[in-house]
Length: 179
Image (cartoon, rainbow, N blue to C red; front, side, top):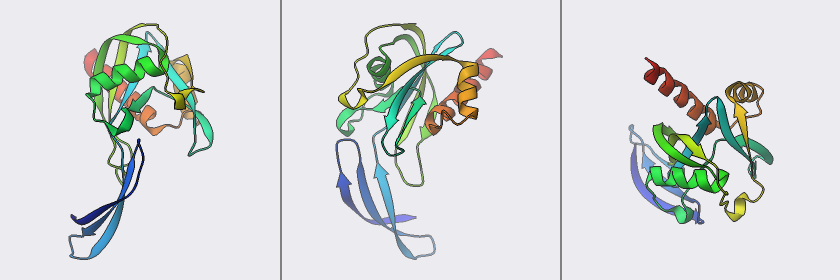
């Protein structure tokens, strides 16, 4: 598919939406709507068998959701993924990690968004004061065992696709490093 034109139809400090004219492989013309968001970092804070999650109100869904700490840099800036991961962990949970290991790359919704994210495993954790952004003022944080996390996923209490996919990356990482 070839892009023939592009125009921004909406923008704010967190995202932009564009409409691209495209030419398909058969030569027919069409349009494609794309949500552009900066890359994000997702962090899995792990201490023994315990995973640290945050819960916040997700406006588009109209409900509160548990998920791993994650986010983008303000004003759609492009920030080093490792630096972004450390910042998101500190901001949302107050935790600082002695070790941050990259586990993999996730695409949020490749059929409609350009956003991609890097997943990090955080270990060697120390507790500090969180530094949440104004939009995160209602955020809560808690520790859960792996069994509790998996039960919450199975029960539909954790539905954040990035968090579930990140957990799968953690399991694959552990399998690779165990043998």
